[in-house]
Length: 458
Image (cartoon, rainbow, N blue to C red; front, side, top):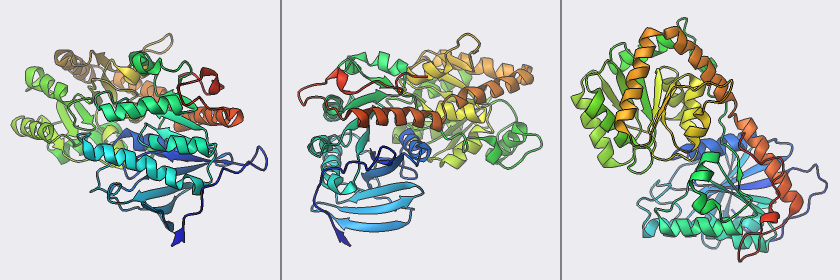
């Protein structure tokens, strides 16, 4: 067991070709996950150029057993830090009674316990920073905000990526506001979300948009068991396993919550318009207890139409499900980006999605780029039901057109590869490290973070 070294300023590189260690400050990294943030951070770490950047993930343990080889343990004054090696990524898990609480990644509701865990995480990251030998911090959302003054003391620049704002949780909203003013550079994940939340992003004139990406080497039918009949065979096997009839099949995959994901909108669409319609509907996920109970009740009453997979599916199961169903339903009330949409496109599940945030950006029709699937106004259960009924009819009447649409969907997904995302972050990191400038503590300085080659959403 090693003692923590005294904090020190980051060393200067021997030459410009030396790779930079980048601290990824996040509450999620596969397989310790709650949702899409784990997918994005894991994909980014794997896609960064290993000759130039070394990702160093630092996160709360949150009660989880680490699946990676253990390298060392250090006892800090107020927590224990364990280092693991996850492929090319160095991972540090921080443990104490607050950071290791019962497997909960994001305590909900965001009450006193959640506030204390957020504060504790940032303070313990600050405690470890001097020993990490990193040259740059990348905060994924603002949970580690309390480390930023220590980072400035050590001369470490920082990037903050806003994946989702939390104005409904004032203590965390304060952390976001503070982080946005203190960070060297601020990014978010879609043009539409930046426009929708201009009330927040207008505090800085240099906010960049870097869309999320997925690992297209993972999200591909090539990794599935070969099927002579392709998708039809996979769908047939899925429907037999779930005891559903052979007909157009829709799936919702995600977190059951009352705020964002719109599970209640899909349930209202079913109860008010789709009950008994010639289509199948699969719910896969967990979360809010009352919503889960409502989905279970609908599934029990709907007989051979609705099924519930009441658990969080690992990525391999999500991939297999999206490669078998005809359509993915994404009824979010708001969605800064929406990785499930890119995953669905990559696997050929045509989307029925609400017109919000990143969903709107990805699905927007442009010259030489036709619309894919269908969209509807967020919260409009009747509009969602009409879109589902229309696509079910098309699936039966024009299967060749559906196959062509699936090929176009895969092509659309390829514009959101993890390597393309990583290249944009690499450009941002390079610009930050080249400038080594900091906004003043009292507010942002727009010229501090050069826009460089990483700017723009496409």
